[in-house]
Length: 93
Image 1: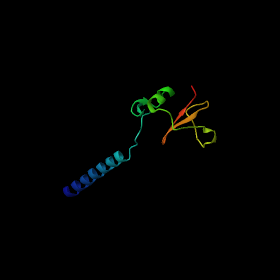
Image 2: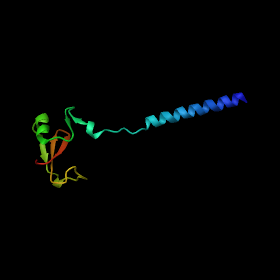
Image 3: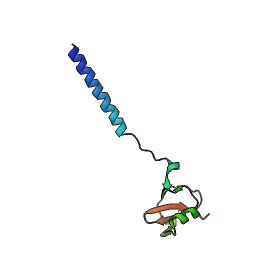
Image 4: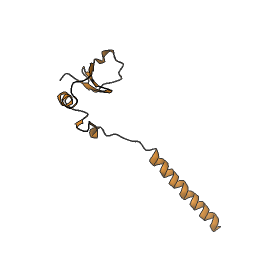
């Protein structure tokens, strides 16, 4: 009888360990908005002039009128400032 109880408790322990390991592996990774920085210098929400000072003149400026976009951070009109594969929304102000 002791052998069966020991075997059962060992299996239960192994099941609990495997279950907790599964939770760690499947946990969500969250990127905090306020901790994200551009080139580790500017926050994502920054002034246009600060972005231009950091990155220089953009490779191109896109008008989103003809682009298929889902939503924007801005309620008023905006453009995309593009450097290589990176693009940032920007207003004229």
